[in-house]
Image 1 (cartoon, one colour):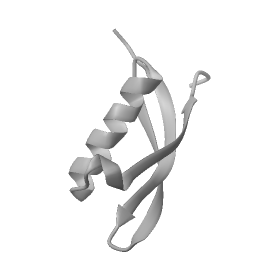
Image 2: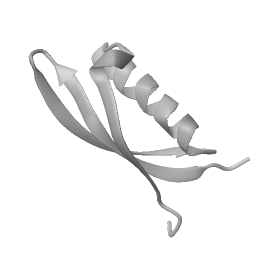
Image 3: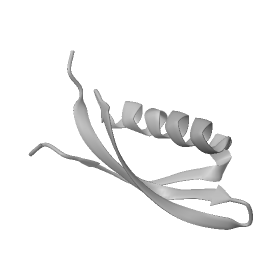
Length: 63
C-alpha cells in the first residue's frame, strides 16, 4: 500500500536554541506523518518528543 507524501514543518530544540526544519515524508495519513517526523528527528538528533514541535503538515498531492 503506497502512502501519500506530506511536507512537515516545525522546530526542534538543539542546545539552548530552537531550529526550524522542513521534511517530506511518505505516510498513509497526517497522524502517521507526524509520528515519522518524531522518529526521524528524534533518532537523528537524540531528542525526546517534547523537544520537537510540528507546526504544519501539508499534503503534496501533485507529486
